[in-house]
View (cartoon, protein in one colour):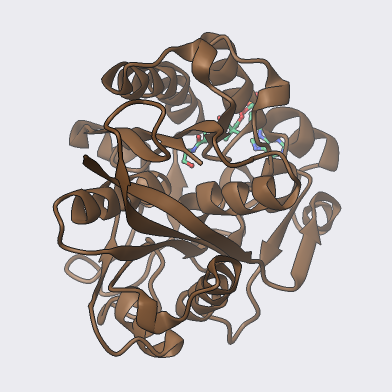
Length: 324
Ligand code: UT7
């Protein structure tokens, strides 16, 4: 018998305010046509002024508990992937723990920017297969609208806010790639690329929050090269190939990156969950949002083999192979 971390619930939350591309035309030298054609983004959600990352995470977590038919007392570990916490500390995860009414177990944040959910999922899987937790809630939640330079048209039109939550449960598997649950993970980072994508403020440097800075073209180049590589590496570890993929659930940064990666993996676009047009780039929230929307649309079904892949600041990148 092999212990597998099997998905039993999924949910998401998007803030009420929807901002169409055309709104940026009022304040910036940009156009709906440019944003659509270069990124695939049509609209994004922005959090209300008093709405925080932890509040959105609690809403997504509550939706996932309802979907799973569980209560907070059934969860013994909570991992939140975020780069936009409410406060410097405590972690968003402990705020969500209290907000959901979880009095036991443990909670912590993972910071791997846009790859955060993949890193958090790999950690949650490790907690389950090593017997340290039985049910883990993994959340990606971000308020990237708080770290935008609204005068920089090359970044501020790309990002959005939201949260998604996935509940994993320890179940016995046969130890084969037919098992449901996480089958393989592949994590990577290379800190020498720090300056390609970063926020120019922080606790020990400026004592301010800072705003996002990105060398878009360079990040694009790395994404196209590294996402297919990491997806391949995870598939190989699982003993599977491209032909086994039912759905790619990619980080939703740019439709052109999503298409190129699918092409490299030999997967048609009708087997890729795409939400970037409606959410923009929500960093660590983008994969759980896409999973939740993919399930709600009836695309992702039990038994489907999923490959989730992401890259972001660090650079940090990785993939998870998961049978739904
Ligand atoms: O989630 C973390 C990972 N992040 C990513 O994966 C993002 C990766 N990068 C990208 O998605 C793309 O590089 C962008 C969408 C950011 C930019 O697309 P691009 O095709 O690489 O455009 P570019 O940076 O080469 O810019 C082309 C032109 C430039 O003008 P010139 O120099 O050719 O005159 C830019 O100044 O487009 C201009 N431009 C804009 N024009 C209208 C940049 N932003 C805008 C804008 N509206 N919003």
